[in-house]
Amino acid sequence: MKKHPSTIKIFLLALILLWGMTLPIYGQEKAEPEPPGFTISRAVIGTGVEDREPVGVADTFSEATEKVYCFLEATEIEKDTEVSLVWFHGETQMLEFSLPLQMGPRWRTYAYKNLRGLKGDWKVEIRDASGALVKEVTFKVE
Image 1 (tube, rainbow, N blue to C red):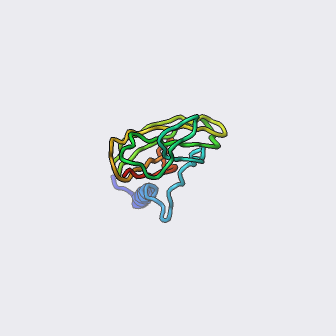
Image 2: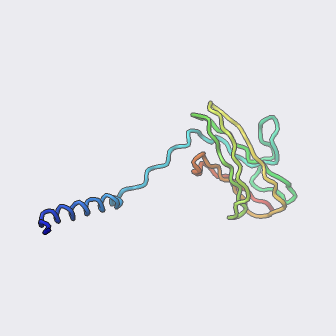
Image 3: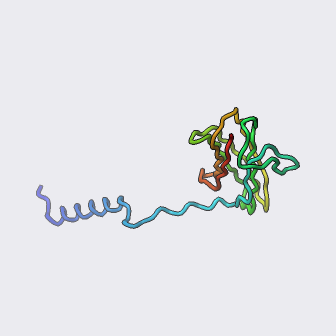
C-alpha cells in the first residue's frame, strides 16, 4: 500500500509539534519558590536558654564551650509547619534537627549542638518544610 504524501507531511508536522512541546521555552524562568508562611524575626546563637529567652548570645565562643543553642523566634505563622536547623562546621554538615512551629502570631524554639572542641567557622541554616533556606546564622569557635 502506497502512502499519500500529505499523510506523511501531517505525521511529520505532528511529530515536530510534540517534540517542540518537550523543549523549554526560550527565556522562561523558574517559578519563584513559595514563601515559607512565616517570618524568622530572631535567630541567635547562645550558651543556653532561660525563661524561654536565649542567654550568652555571641558571635564567637571559646573552645571550652561545650554546647551552643540556636534560638529562633518565628512570627506570622500561617499554619502548623516545621523548620529544620542544619548545623555545619566549615562545609561539613554535622546535624539536622526538625522543630515544629505552630500557627499563630509568635513561636519560640531552639536546638543545641555539642561542639566537641571543634574550632573554626560554624553556621546553622534554618530551612522551611520544603527544604528552602529561610535564614542563616554564623558563629566562630576559637
